[in-house]
Image (cartoon, rainbow, N blue to C red):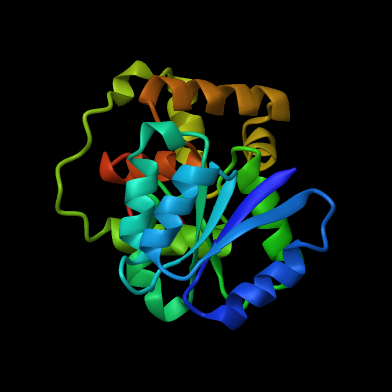
Length: 221
């Protein structure tokens, strides 16, 4: 059973997501939060698998709430999915950098919402090429901080190649097809890259690839 906390200051939005997700046999809504502070508290108390987090909320916004949840070592297994709208794109990159496993737009279709929750719950990231690649490419160009300390030199040539493809938003299956590998082999490469770089999930690998200059905005085509 996938345990989910809904965090949004709009009661109707929470009700809509609840009605969609509770219709699934493998998903359970364990709590709702109306602000970011409450979301952090519920995450700590309930240890859900997934928190659906609105970016703009009173008391504490979704970005800071995500940062606090991701920064708590007791909540290592909790995954955060940001709920946003396109006019809030500025916040999305910061949320992924803070540790969110991806995002969903609020007007997403029910099947996409359900699929997104399941994807994140099993440890993957929501990196839809049509949306996330574009956003990360745009906001990576604004980075002013120095690259993180992680050593890309620890990666083999093949792993660097796989990381570059992860950074473009490709799935394991797509990477396998591009490199003429089996999906299982592609997944093994990604797992090793995560371990070597100390990254939480694929979303952090994307950020790392851009911040280290391995991939540059505009290279995606």
